[in-house]
Length: 477
Image 1 (spheres, rainbow, N blue to C red):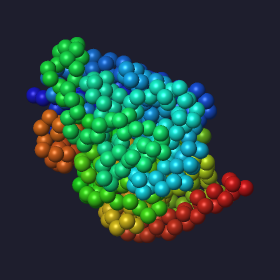
Image 2: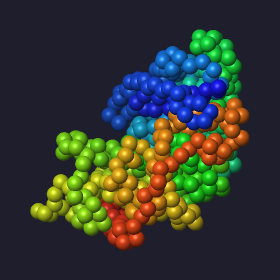
Image 3: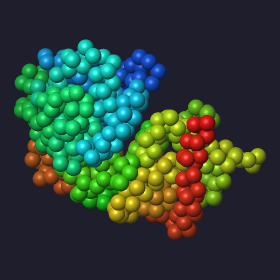
Image 4: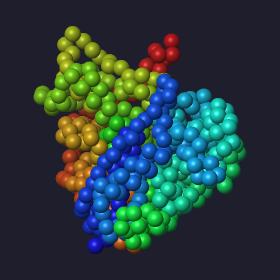
């Protein structure tokens, strides 16, 4: 029986799944590596640590009969290699905040015409501008520009490649036409020859090097291009057909909507990216989701997660929360704005404030969904995944705030699961990504919105939209 390894290259660690062709999980392991914070707001990792963790992970799985490997990986990171394939400097990560000026500069240019997206803090192009200005020697040494997961594929195969979904987050790709943008290369001072060869996520890139196969007792093993973490996770949730939606409640939160066609919102406040199925998707990302709840419950209250009595307050909570603890990405693109509680009174209780955190995240997610709806995309149902999805209360809130049926997954393993499915397609186990999802992904019964509660939350949502401009104005004074 063929086995497949899906790898999730995250910021805090590496997760590996060993998956059978029917989607059953045979084994899994997780490894960690350090994050470096050399200055306030900076965030870096050593790519060699990722590969060392990958080799340890293969050893721990101890799998034979491996047919294919693929990856889901943290996006936007700048991995710079020299002409000999050696790492030039630590990878500047997706959550690194040093490029605010470069991002502002890029948004004075018509970058959305070149790429389909505006510049957001963390995108790779702004990191290249920073490197060019602040580390001239390292910039001059850079012969290959890679994304994090692609470094692992490069070390396994020697192939310099990436996929369209991950490349979409560099701000160097003309997403609609699925090619590197010559205009963005000129702006960043690089050549197209420094950028990887482009593949669809499910396409085979190459084979694992012979010496690595011999080390683990493998035969010929296909390496598929893989996908950015959100696109890989979407595959694992079955969000692959036009109009499919997945909401993720991880550290950050995302609304991910699959589309057969390239869609570009007029204000560019959502990401218009290539999808791992060979088509496209719209994605809105909020920076604080489950992390906002963790901060409030664990760091501030020091209490548990149970909220007895919350059901009676749904739709009528007088307290609101703006979840901008670390700024906001979509739709505001504002790294400086900060969060707030609004509507406090002597009658306010811990329950009011705890519930407001859950509702505030749901309202922020709806901001993203409304932008997609303004493009004519109809979303009536969605899956939900991530740590926050374990809360039945939060599921109910989100279903009613978004006014969609919400279902959870019987098997939820994040980007690693979707990556394993991409490897299956690359090896011919399934004809395409949609076929793999139809055969493998199973969902639990959905939570339906309630007419009266959805209407009440619609009114609360309208009020919540006043929070961002008020906070922006107050914090600027």
